[in-house]
Image: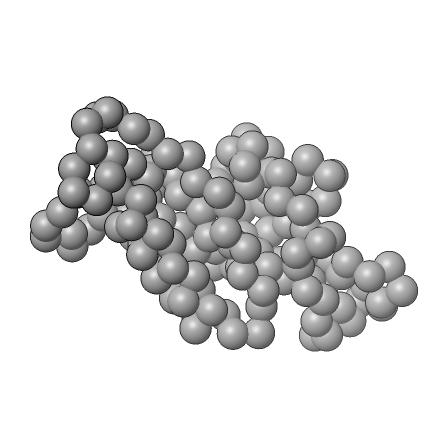
Length: 143
C-alpha cells in the first residue's frame, strides 16, 4: 500500500512507499541556523538515506531557504531551512522501455524539506517534488 501517489510534471506517476520525517533543527543545543549547520544537516540526511536504502539512488531536492536576520554572527548570516526534514522512498514503472513492465520497476530515494507534517498530497504536491527528473535519477530493478 502506498502512502501517496504523485503525478510528476513529466506525467509519470510515482508512489511514496515509505516516509521518514524529523525536525530539521531538533536537538540543536547551541549555535544558530546558518550555512555550515545546514550543510551538516543535509550531509547527515544524505548518509541516513544511503544507509536506509543502500540499493537505491538518493536525490536531494534543493531546499528553500529563509534569511530572517541580515546581521551575520560568527558563522555567517542566519539561514533557515523549512522545519521538517523528509526522506521518502518512491517507486514507479521501469524507466527503460525495453524492460518487461510486469517484472521491472524503478526506484528513487528523495530528500526534501517542508514546513508541515503532511504526507505529500498527490496531484497537489509541492512543485519541487513534482519536478523531479525521474527518468534521469531513478534506477530500474527487477522484482
